[in-house]
Image (cartoon, rainbow over all chains, first blue to last red; front, side, top):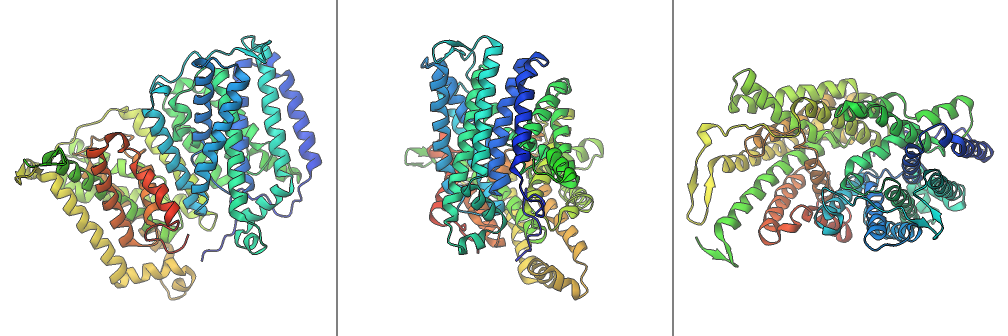
Amino acid sequence: MTLRTQTIAAPSRAMPRRSADELIAMAVLAALLAVAPFVVYPFFLMQALCFALFACAFNLLVGFAGLLSFGHAMFFGSAAYFSAHLAKVWGWPPELAIIAAVIGAGVIGILTGSLAIRRQGIYFSMITLALGQMIYFLYLQTPFTHGEDGIQAVPQGKLLGFIDLSHQLTFYYVVLAIFLFGIIAIYRIINSPFGDILKAIRENEPRAISLGYKVDLYKLVAFTLSATFAGLAGATKAIVTQNASLTDVHWTMSGEVILMTLVGGMGTILGPVVGAFTMIGMQNYLAGFGQWVTVIQGIIFVVCVLAFRRGIVGEIAHWFKRSL
Amino acid sequence: MIPLLGISSQALFGQLLLGLINGAFYALLSLGLAVIFGMLNIVNFAHGALYMMGAFCAWFLLNYAGIGYWGALVIAPVIIGMFGMLLERTMLQRIAGLDPSYGLLLTFGLALIIQGVFLNFFGSSGLPYAIPKELSGGQNLGFMFLPNYRAWVVIFSLIVCLATWFTIEKTRLGAYLRAATENPALVRAFGINVPRMIMLTYGFGVGLAALAGVLAAPINQVRPLMGADFIIVVFAVVVIGGMGSIMGSILTGFLLGVVEGLTKVFYPEASSTVVFVIMALVLLVKPAGLFGRTA
């Protein structure tokens, strides 16, 4: 057997988690985001918030359960398709479209999760990648996704019948509320007894089994929760950008969310948010470079894995000996 | 032509042959993945990109050095294999001992870089590569027309796979390799240069991928993304077969190629997903994989 000297995304063991630090950091983040639309273009912020929530959902799985999923685009993209279809073709109001899409993503999460958790470690990653590719091909062939065109011109509608989402600043605060709901929920999950058991499984799965925990059940619940929040991000993104396309379900999207989380810091609360803003910002600035963006992303991957495994927030936390 | 279940024998056997060819590539790639995983404990995500580089290398040799198919068949795997060894020495070596997931992430990044660079210079359209004239034409077998080149690919891949199996399972070199897979520290204590062995193993696995790339060049066009989606199917093949057994990798590769080919005949809509569906079924029935020892 190989010795596992470092599990993926394990923070420095000596550092106890201090939730006070994390709460303060989250409050600062919320305050910053509340004033941000007066400084930065709100559409960019809304997009970044959706991807930040997506990365947080992904981080719930990789950072705290130690399960590296390579297929998370299937939840993000499926929910984007569902909410876009419901809002546009069925004419559902945005809140119902999003809720239904989130449930849909959760169901896909249960189905794919119960398959993927049958194998450990590296096989789990390959299985999620393959299942994601299968779902991609399904969407490529089913008519409701409109193939290469995607679902375009999704109406934003009125939230709860009276909040007009076509007003950009209003919409921004709605998206911010959804994001904060997501990140606080994830924070609660991580800091619950359930979250502690997940971390125990991440650190030493055989021992968790020997202690009598139904490891597979915990993994499945974590997987489904992660899929559900990824779905929330995707469903919201479809309403924000008013489209859902094959890009959202392709494996490159799974790669992007991994990169965001890796850059920000796996296993930290705020890392995925920082990573998502960094990567989305970078993509905006580098949009003129065409295919070189892929190369740059690849280089960031390589550099992060070789020299920067803690990520931005992880390094800062390590520096100040805090947990963020 | 004998019609069979309402399908002409040409269509049936033609697709079966195409399936066998795809199966040959699956086998060569999953074999390389298994060998690399055994020694380095890394799942090489860059395998698809290196397969593509093999095909491009053949194209470069033909167009810039005037070296034809037969030369490329030998030279391209060596060049790409050496490139692989360079990657191992400069990068993969540094993450040895970490969680295998980091290896997957690192090689994923490498795949993005390699594919991105080729996309920049060649775009996403394909470059033609002619079938060598010795193997052009084909045989009429009565029930189907058999192109010579396709027959060659299947037979040659099979020979390479079996030779690899023989080397690893039946020779002294293979015994060292298997020993180093089980317990590198002990093998090192016997005075065998394990780090060099790891480097050569990675180079060999990469060379197999490049060889598959050269074989594929005349069939599929030479495209920067020819390995990008292909590698995901190969991963599914690896999950189905399990990486523990060399023969298992070979058998699973060919078997799934044939199944895919048959699906193209009887239910074409499912041909791109059938391997993934089989993977799901195998996970339900036999989670360790058909030839897997442990998870």
